[in-house]
Structures are given as C-alpha cells and as structure tokens.
Length: 516
View 1: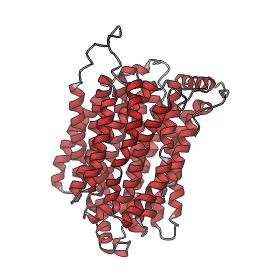
View 2: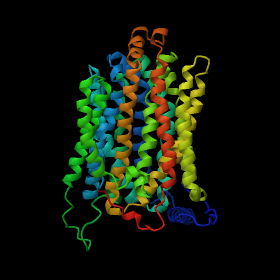
View 3: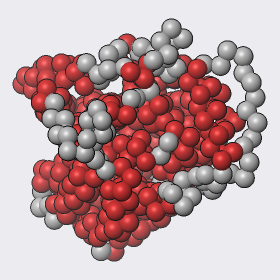
View 4: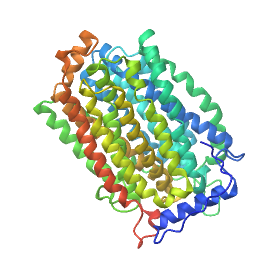
C-alpha cells in the first residue's frame, strides 16, 4: 500500500453523518490534500522502525502457531495446548497496564525496550524447555513483553502521528502481517520438520536487533517524555507517579485470568475453588481498568473497547485450534497446516487498507458490522473441514474471508480509541483496549479449552502422539465443533456492538471519558 496519495478524493456529503465519522473523513481528506504521509520525510524512519517491530511480532505469531502442535506433542502436553496460548495473553494483561502507566508517566521508550527484551527472553526460554509447563512459563514471559510492546506502540502512534495519518499507519501495521503470514508458516514448518521445533523459537530473538536500531532513536526524538511536563512546559517538573490502584488491578486481572484458565483445564469439582477465586479477582479489576459502561456496550469509547475484545477473542479462540485440527484430523504436515492459513494475512491487510481510505470513512460503521459478520461466518464454517469429502483448501478461502473481516474491524477500533482519548490518557486507554483484547482471548480460550478437553480433545492429542497422523481412534470432531460454534456466536454479538461506536450526539466530548 502506498501511503502517499496524489490528490484528495471528494468526500460525499452524507446527511446526518455521525460527528466522529465526519471529523475522521475531513481529517483524512486534509491528509491526502497536503501530500504528507507516513513515508514522508518527517515520519519515514519512525514508520519503518515501528512497522519492523510489527513485522517481527507477526512473524513470531505465524511461525510459533505452526510449530505449536509439534512442540505440544513432543513435550507430552496436548492437554495443556490451550495454556500455551492463554499464558501469553494472561501475563500480557499486566504488561499492558504497566506499559500504559509507564508511557503516560515518562514516555513509551522504556516500556518498548523492556518489552522487546522480555519478548526475546521468553522465546529463548520456551525454545529450551524440557517440559510443557516450562514451555508455558516461557510463553508467559514472552506475553509480558508483548503486552509492554503493543501498548507502547499505540502511544507512539498517538504522539508521533497526527490524527490525519493514524488510519494510514494502522493500515501499514496490518500490511506488516502479509509477508510473515505467507512465508512464516512455510519457514516454520520446514524448520520444524528438518531441524526441530525448538529452532523456530530460538531463531526469532536475533531478529529483534534491527527494529531496535531503527526505531528507538526516532521514538526518543518524536515521542519521548511525559505528556504533561508542567503547566508552563517546565522540563524539570516531576513525572506523574504510578497509579498504584491500577497496578493492583493489573496484578488481580492477570492472576484471576490465570486461575480461571487453570480451572478450565482441570475438570474436577475441586477446580471450582480456583475458578471462583479467579472470578472474584477479575470482576473488580476489570471494572477498575475499563471505561465505565464497557460491558453494557455504552456508545463511544466503551463500545470501542468492548468490540476489540469480542472480535479478537472470538477470532483467536478459533484460530488457535485450526492447526491442531488440520494436523490431527486431516493428517496435514505442520507446514501445510500453517500454510493453509497464509491467505489471511493478505486479506486482513486488504480490509485494513480499505478502511484507511477517506472516501469510505462515512461508511465505517457499516463496514465494521459487515466485517464482524464475515468473522462469524468463517468461524462457523471452519469445522466443515472435519468432513472427509470437504477439500482442505476450502478452509483457506473461508479463513481468508474471516481475516478480511478482521481487517475491516481492528484498525478502525485503534483509530477511534486514539481519537476519543485525551493525550494524557492515551496510554491508559490504549491499555484498556489491549486488555479487552487479551482478556477476551484468555477467557474464551479457557472456555474453548475446557469444552475441547471435556469432549475428548486430550484423546485426540494422545492418539496423534502415538501414530503421528490422524487415525480413526483419534477422531473427535465434536471436540473441535464445541470450540468453533460458541466463538461464532461471540462474533455475532460483536456485529451488534459495531453499531454503537459513535458517541451519542448529546455527548460530543466523549473523548474525555474516564476509566474508573
């Protein structure tokens, strides 16, 4: 996608256009009319650097997802398969809140560098793990780093790019997933089959050097330091202290999510105890970290934050089981299982690119509703591949449609959040957006993992570990259907929430919405 547009297209006048959509359309039109862009002289180095960070994260996600079924099988940990994903999201919750506080207090640079370091360390830990629980612990360290990084990047975007450029940089983030989605599964599958799954994890940390060298100097120059240095710009003013209440909530939400995930994987009556303890920790923590009215889908910022969780949770909750389903039920190699999902990177970028265009901004809400309906359809249709006479390649098309829908949804939620957030609250609200995403992933993976285990998912893995391929004794299609269909229902709820993203006309100052 070219970030430079030769001329501003005319934006049609839409009667009674919502205020936020009209403002976004006008801003996007001014951006194109001015000839500036994210690859202009003022932003080129920074854009390349942070897009490189996204590229590394994308490559890790696609590569690790391909290697995960083999790693779980060799570590005798298929029963803990969902933990390998949810542990990442559980610890990332704490990292997100910490990064929001850290960035609002002293700028995003420290959170970003620390996050990249923890991300790399977690990969090394998982790559050298001798048991599945140690592997899960490494994923937890990696998740903490990932939580720091993603919120810090959002704060960088909010500070270094004015409102007219944010749709373009978010579209570029999505485009950064295209190449990793295509080559990541192929490289990961080849390495897994010929060198072993460990090298997939151990090879990625070396790649973080380039984005560090490119991005950090520019971030220091354009987005460093706290937002509020004093009423008169006093450089010596002390930074705001950490909000200890929010840090306690962050710890509570991470511990509560972990207990809930543990209870979901250990289906015994005694597991009611950690489940209740997790819920008691989660409820007040979520209420304290999310904008008021989030789980009532209140219009404006609360609905934006809720939609991000519903969309990401439903999609990731389903996608995490796709490689396992293809490997164990249809006998695909890890390479082919991962490569069958490669089309999704391109269609996701396409959806994000469409939403970045000025001429479609007035229709943003309708496109987001359509996107969530695409996601719901793709998740519901994916288990059709369990039927032997259904060609495996149809899953690539179905999932590509779902990824197109995600591209129409995810980028705009990020743009809307930054637009509705005062500069001094960009870190906290960005953290809330990412917490919603990660918490939904944890909860839905926990529920999906419990349903999977209850309907014979562990037997699927055990039989595959012995035979190395799908066999009649390992056929438990109901275990996979029990994961996918509830996720599709969650996506349908997200389609409804997508109709509530613009703040009510009586509250044009919704940007000042506070987290409680």
